[in-house]
Length: 316
Picture 1 (tube, rainbow, N blue to C red):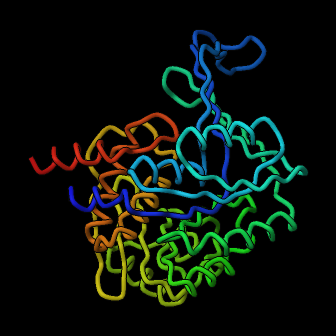
Picture 2: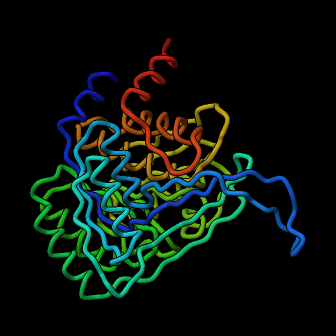
């Protein structure tokens, strides 16, 4: 385990997708509003963090790998803040600016260590900016070992089928965190990582592990995927390839916040597969990383040191 994690410093990944700024307002809740039956939050502290595809990139560099990020933002305060946070994190960002949109922002209000409210601000980027981004994507392919497409359904991956085609033609693995109930747009990818709800929306419900495996086989073959990973929250995660099925039980710990856990999983998988780790080892370490990140509040990253310590504790 230690040797493969050390090898991550040689890995170069390209992340493309929907970036967003995650804003957190932390405060105290001591009374109910006289205007409506809602809590009054007295905000004491504010934080801004990388969200969406930017959080995937943040997780990749936290593991010690190198990462380039390609996305679209607006010409606004949130977009400028994202640029600054990305630079501070050591991520090489290629953010195309669309003056006609507002950068996606998720504002979370936290009281007593619990999320009370989330407010989203978002608009779809223009076709012209997305076409320019596609040309930039093709230029950046040569300098990466693998591609991660982080789809949050915000319009930044309108040309995803062409991106998959270009990446596979360049012999680059393509890992996708999917969104929505139509996975046909992901055909030809190396791996997709739907959560339980997303997989059910596409493949239908299952009662047994055998039914799950059969549904996964059908979808994998239909989309011509090398592998399919279904993340199942407290039930862990299951990987399905043409040769094997692997199940990793969830790491037992108190779950503090699941937001961003999918970002950590796909970032860890991509980095490890680019470092030539076998599927079983990559999935196991990604599962450990997920167990660490759900113990943190809000969108967060897992470092290589945290992984080594957790794996050591499990062995030891």
